[in-house]
View 1: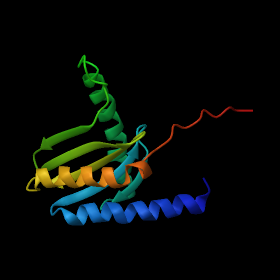
View 2 (view 1 turned 45 degrees about the vertical axis):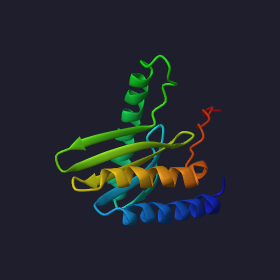
View 3 (view 1 turned 90 degrees about the vertical axis):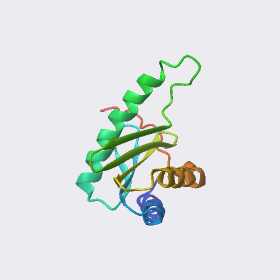
Length: 140
C-alpha cells in the first residue's frame, strides 16, 4: 500500500472515530489497534497515550483468548472486554481481521450506548478496520 492511500484511509478512519466519540457523551479516547499492539488510528488522545493503550490492549486480547479457549463450545475468539475502574470504563471490541476498537470513557458514560455505538461502527466499517499479518522480513 502506498503512503498516499494509507494516509487517506487514516483520515477516513479519524472522522469515523470522532463520530463515535461525539455521539456518546463522556467518551474520552478512541483507538484502533492491530492484534500485535500497534496503534492504527486514534481520536481524543495524544500519540504516546494511544500507543500505550494499543500495547496494553494487545495483552488484554491475548488474555481474553486464553480464557475463551476454556469454553468447550466456543471458538476462543475475543468479542468484547469491559473493565470498570474508579473513574471510568474501558471497552475493547474485535473490529475486523486482526484489528480491535478500544474506548476509554468516564464513569458516568451510558455503558449500553457506548457498546451499541461501537457495535454499529464495527458493523458499518469492520472490513476497513483490518490489519493483515505482517510478513517476516528476511535479512539479506
